Amino acid sequence: MNGATASAFHDLDEFEGPLAVLGGPYSNHLALRAVLEDARRRGARRIVCLGDLGGFGPNPGKIYPLLAEFGVLTIAGNYDRSLAERLSDCGCGYTHPADNHFAQLSYEYTNRRTTDAERAWLRELPAEGRFTRGGRRWLLCHGSPRRVNEFLWESGSSDAFLERIARDANADQVLCAHTGLHWQRRLPSGARFVNVGAVGRPANDGRPGVWYAFFSAGASVAEFVSVAYDHEALAREMEHEGLPAEFVETIRTGWWTTCLEILPGKERARGRF
Amino acid sequence: MTDTSIAFRRSPAPHVPYLALDTVWFQVAGTLCNLTCKHCFITCSPTNHTHEIMSRATVRGFLEEASGLGANDTYFTGGEPFLNREILGILEDALRLGPATVLTNATLITRARALALAELERASRYSLELRVSLDGLTPETNDPIRGEGCFEATMEGVHELAHVGFSPILTVAQTWGDAEDRELRERFHDFLRSNGLTRPRVKILPLFRIGREASRSRGYAVEELLTEEHMRGHDPWTLQCSTSRMVTSRGVYVCPILIDAPDARMGKTLSETLRPFPMSHGACHTCWATGASCRN
Image (cartoon, rainbow over all chains, first blue to last red; front, side, top):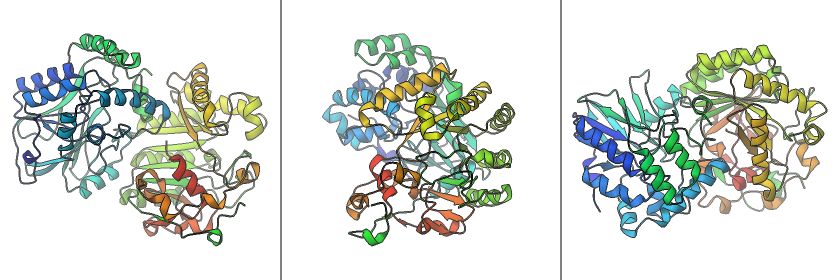
């Protein structure tokens, strides 16, 4: 197992080149491959994954070789930590029983299919990554700079709050994921938050494609890129694996059907369910 | 025994650490309510003036202080927040700074108020959530707890909110056992769908055995007081007292549940209250045991 190196991230590292940052693959290996090929085509010189490799999709073992093949630098998500430590749940941070019910189904499936070698590899993943770009201090994490499973929603995060957690983390630019919905905001101080979304699940927008963030050379503003992939093939593989019909429906339609209770009102209103 | 004072403790109360000020609550209608629910943990009623209605100017001062401290979201409760004549202006101020939630019984939500709320929501980049309390899906099950005619009045308010595009979060105090839990939750969702809410949202809250509820069922037993042992290995982030405070007309309290407890008042301003708190109350046990939070 290889593909991620903690040593590639440290404060003194400067990186100005084209950059791709992607959120949770959730075992969706077909979408991940399509995104990585898209990033390479665009000339990305560094590709970072913000964790949550497993969950939701089929056959979690198919993710690891892709990360290695494309030299992806990977940050630990809550899912990765849970699998590494053999915890009893994914630690996603849902508070509603209906959300937890579906989260548990996918976690138990993924946990059963994760090998000891994969767990050992997950255990080595760094909690965050840092580099400087254009003189700004970039911080890459899974949930928020302070908690791996904190949900930073666009309509649920105040400027004052984001300013504080960026300041506490000594960062001018924070890249995060965990929510599955992409957004970015420049704060009054000039700091920027970018939630890169997820590549494992569509963005509850009625389209089956998935999203990631691309930064052209020197840029701090993200370009959100939508990537189509053979979602029907993934849906069939999920059915073959006996995963819940609700998950398969999301892959086919682009609408979230589960883990919806955690969404704030504005984000919830944009979806179908 | 319903007294939870320290005189009955077998060992000292553990302190919850102060982690950050993420959430600020406002007892914006004081303890004044147009209803007199039998399980109300702070015994609100049309005549309870323990905490008074807060003015827009007072709330704005605290909102500015909260924002300066890097707070994220605000919650507005009572009593019944729509008894406060300045509630729409208060929400306008709050939504300029961050996401806001109102806890209401919806009986005072008219068409005009629903439209005004929708306009406030549209004008803000942040979410405005409406949480509506109900205790049963029929007048026969709801009204014995919340009062005669209450079911119908609440559902009228819910329909007004749905009409302007809100999907209010139905909030129910858990008056049933764990065995029926799953089935009842399903029924709440189905109930909302059948009332035209295509994205049903439900929040279940545990009962706190204080206020009027202590006489309806029972108070806390001495075994239900937290000790250091309870806190060993317990994640403090799951306790809302580590990251939120409650502002009332009388000052700043540790949480929304304990505003009748004099020792839960931590100071006059938010800045004065950013410190650990001894979890000496029976209600602390409920949060600890259920993982419950008053947040959405």
